[in-house]
Length: 326
Ligand code: AMP
Ligand code: MG
Image 1 (cartoon, rainbow, N blue to C red):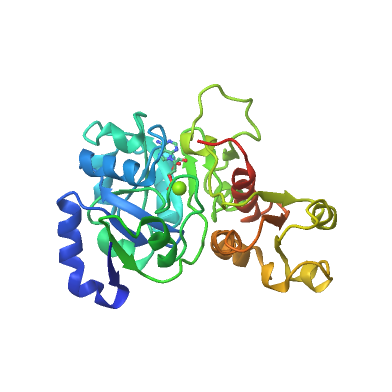
Image 2 (image 1 turned 30 degrees about the vertical axis):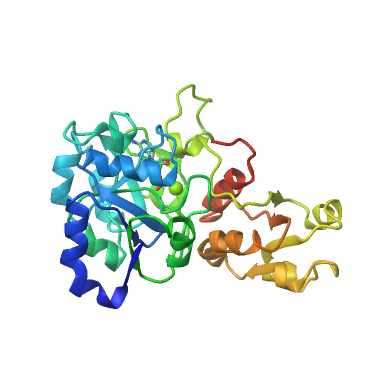
């Protein structure tokens, strides 16, 4: 692994872009999480991403761009509803699903005839993405998404990739994914249903308002994901769950109010992580998974209200707690 500091990037930008154009893999920060990127039109390089991550072949990637002109080569058509959303939310943490232009190798979309595209707002991502970069999160499959360069190093330090160190990411959860035509949110994220409704009144969260589907619409979401190495429990009742795990080293993620109100004398304070807002929880969640898994036997996360970014947090927690393996 080669690490480039943010301050050195301008000087090394041509070098990094050449790497991408020659089939190299570059890990870079976005405002959501770190991505593991390859040139989207380079089938071999994209394949390398699947191999590096040990990613199931039916889990598609998102293509990152930094200007709208690039869409023409990636998508068949731009539905009229998409224009409004792009105007309002790009650059930013919103991924839109389009019909895939056949010029794009099918592997990018894991064989689907649709393609996911996003225009990130992070200054480093913006600098790189005049090359269309196909990138999933820069973690090994099933592991928590990386929100710091250290997390990328933890999963890929032995690999032949370039990592651009841009410090900690701001949002900490992956982008909202939306199918513009059906109005379905395929993956909740920072941009919530309330905000999207203003621009796309038909918007709904997949699974809540539609009957169960045989064919999964956002393939990645069917897998166990984001998981720490120790069991994780989404707890509706911390006191009861602490009692149930008596004798174990218990990690706790809970609100400041809950911690101030007293947790349990048996819980080591070093194993407690507290937050004062859901945004703070989102920004730190995956980092806390990676810290607590090293010191505890089980992690209990206090359930949060499913409003605003709370919808995305609970979605990730349920996946992380799931025992179904990919
Ligand atoms: P990651 O960035 O690692 O979370 O992976 C990208 C995610 O975007 C996938 O797991 C899917 O949930 C979603 N995605 C990418 N392409 C498509 C697509 N064509 N249709 C539906 N969802 C997609
Ligand atoms: Mg991922």
